Length: 299
Image (cartoon, rainbow, N blue to C red):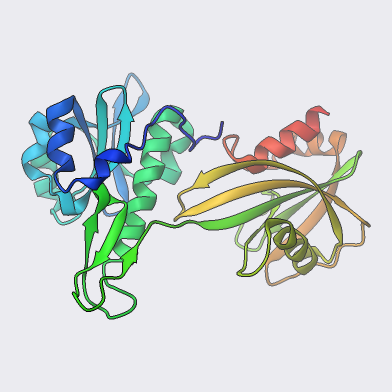
């Protein structure tokens, strides 16, 4: 399972039909609140480890507005509700939440969080990003309002009534490898010595397999055969779904797209291990890209 996947969370679809969902969460069991502030989360350090700051309804409930909240789901009888407190000043935030903590971006702390916490934060981050992007109707420009416990935005104009549901941007990851070699790339924005798989957004009108073949041809000029789908991963930076594929190249003749990539290199298993010992950096261990690379190295 990926770092941002969480199979234990129940999305509570039935509860979302009620406008009084927040009251029901509080009445039916324990309600745990996840504070969110301007794209960041509150993190405390306990025994040298990072710990996400949650708050009970009793401590923070008076500051919660359903319009600025989202029901993430349930674990047993415990409901988890993400609360956007971005409208408060830093001073007010510290007074409301209490305790000792710092603000952190998920990308900076995800590697040191338990998977259950990382998945909740990823879900909340993507939802609040979507909420801000759909604060106004794209059809008539009227304001929208929250519905379905945060999983629907509805236009407030009676003449329009457009509905917006959360969506993600699908991204294909391509691990190009033969039996003995793999091709890794360094994107232009990456520092020297950092390599990973190829990646690209899926365009309208194409399948995932077509996106894989198009992206590889555009970025490195190779024709490839899709060998197999590997796995997928929510990626909340800001709101994507990474879909990993293992592909086999029809040749080794790379033609680099210099607008996207700074360099590519073919590695044998031995040379990749040696280069890593010399400081070469690969994608984060929690990523699908890294999982594909590691499995090939072990093969």
